[in-house]
Image 1 (spheres, helix red, strand yellow):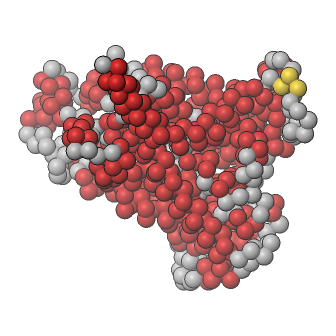
Image 2 (tube, chains in turn red, brown):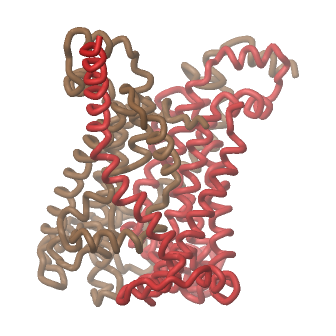
Length: 304
Length: 302
């Protein structure tokens, strides 16, 4: 009896140990490069830290300064981030869903070709490709967009697209939207194709008469998990794309802070001014923003 | 109203979601998609066309979108040149290829073993770990650049080959997709193998891995794109020019801040952007059907 119990305990131990062995490597890397950095950011946000001396605890003062004294944050960074996030996040997400829906209405071969075309810009998203954008939006009359608009007589003189505050933000949004049909888009397309077609037939019998009704009463409710996955990817992608303004204009801060997003603000304080405690407080605010948006998406697409 | 009924009555298979063939009702979608696709393609067509332009076309006034007399001069220039700190360009390319290869393989190994445990094994922390990982889907790496830098510094990883690889291996989306995909595999298969005396590693290697190929292809693409296009690691963690990546080199070619000759850099930058872009495209085309079958399992349930 006792030996039997011990054997069972031993077998149980062997099985569990093996499972932990399988997750160990991932868990370790996750801890070092994801979990600990988040905790450290949280800790540093309550300190003064210039990366030379040890961090000195200063309570909530970083947050208080951020909310009350950081004019650049309140005047440029926050409004810019919200504008960028709303247009690229929900805007890009809605676009991704609509395009996925349209693609799902086509037979396999053309659908695959179009999906490839729509997805491929997301491969070029990133800093490396800003070289291409700099050429297209080049500010002299030799720039491709300038020359095109000049020849159409839309503009009379070349425009410094990437250096002028009134255009930089728009270009950032267009470029990011262009490259936003990524993983989330593919997930939603796959979700659309997996919906049982009998649901549509049943819906038709139940009196659904337009495709809009079909989308809202059948399609979206049947693919909530994919919708949620797409939403999370859209939110993360939006904030992760924050360096595009600096990459395009070639300077941090961006011209007259026109394209300054929260991510650039962190870099500005952390790596240019070495006020790392303050930068950490801004990072925490950024992480909280992502959290709030994700909660919101959760609300929308929760399975009841 | 009558018309719509008719649409539902015949040829249900050719219209609506996932049709088998062509139906006139699809025309409006083509009408919408073709101009849009053309617009989306413009920058990519530009990358191709620009890379083969001779100098006089690169600086022609008015500029021309399409190349007229294609030449390989930009590519030969690029590889004939030494970078500003006399590192041959081929070195950056070699670094990028090696880093990408190691990252993709290591990431597949790390994520698929963890996914196997989270999907098919029973252990106490299983649910907690998966919840943490799902929460981490919304992790924005760029937000914690500073603590990451401090940790990497402490670990002595600055200026090493490994700093390109280790930080990107734990990829929550990757683990998530693999785990969801494995959940769809029947447990009976594994139980049968266990009865036959297979070890956990045996089950992982001979049963799970062959069956999750589509999900692995997807992770491979995601990691590939992250590693191959990565500029930040070289910019932040690496001082040694011989350890930097090709994508990073491309980003310096035209930036006046780094003292590069902006005019001379144009042609080479055009060639280099094509070299950065093309592998992304080829790999996605090769693996796209696998990606789609993985994405069916991507649903996020709360």
